[in-house]
Amino acid sequence: MIVLNRESIIEGLIEIRKEEDLENSIIVNNIKSIIDLNDISNLDKLKLINNELGKILFDETI
Image 1 (tube, rainbow, N blue to C red):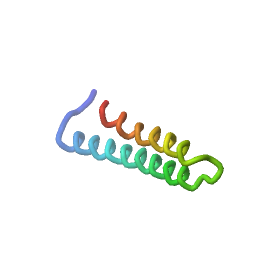
Image 2: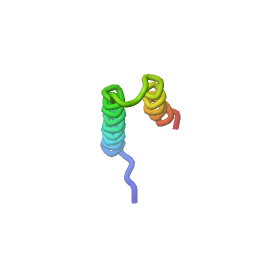
Image 3: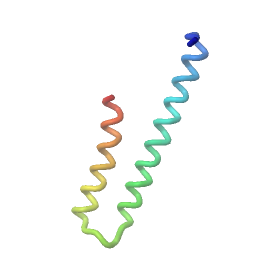
């Protein structure tokens, strides 16, 4: 049985926020890694960065 009270709702929101922060930090680290790549062109880097940014935008629209 699910108990909906103020504490459980707040705990749930905090957990969701932690998951979002973790996902966003992974995406930021991926972008940093892409920028540091030396063996691909800037255009390819831009495509990869756009792909990572799309993950953030896609997650926020759900």
